[in-house]
Amino acid sequence: MTVSVTKEKLVIRKSDGKLLYAQGDEDFANILLSFLTSPLGGIVGLLRGSSLGSIDALHNSIADLDKYMYFVSEEAKERIVAPQLALQYSELSKQILSTKSSVRQYYYCYYKPRDYNIEGYVKGPRIFVATDDLVITPLSPITLLNLLNSFETPFEDLKEKVVTIGKKECLSILKAALTSTSALSNGLAHLITEVKEVKEEI
Image (cartoon, rainbow, N blue to C red):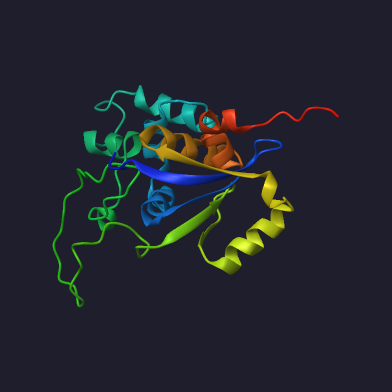
């Protein structure tokens, strides 16, 4: 996996410990967007049977079958059990899956020359905001104000925390995104538990 370690800012509601949104640069946005390019079989392999329901069972049942007896070729089984990214993503470095591919490569000409310095999907330098359910928007004063108003949370009840996001956190967010609508809260729970404040009864 080619995900690099990044530092992101989490905005958390102190009263109940709920993660409202994460704020990070284009690297963080690119990592989240790479979820959309990843084949499901590759994701199951990355998460190694960590409770994705029937998809886990389907993947494991195929993985145990003899590649010579039941598949048209060894490559055919490999494409199902451990699929790689499509070749058009092979030059983008911020990916959750490996960009290696055993598929035969073909060469063809582009009308427009390709920029070989491309490393992701969104332009930078720029700050992006990702809500708990992974709605991503570029940061602006208006966007931030609308976001805070939607949470109906006073400023004094907000807390910021800078965290390090690496491979473990990316996989955790990915799994949570496939199983819930609170991808950041569930995926980064181990980083935000200590932020919750217990209010004393008056």
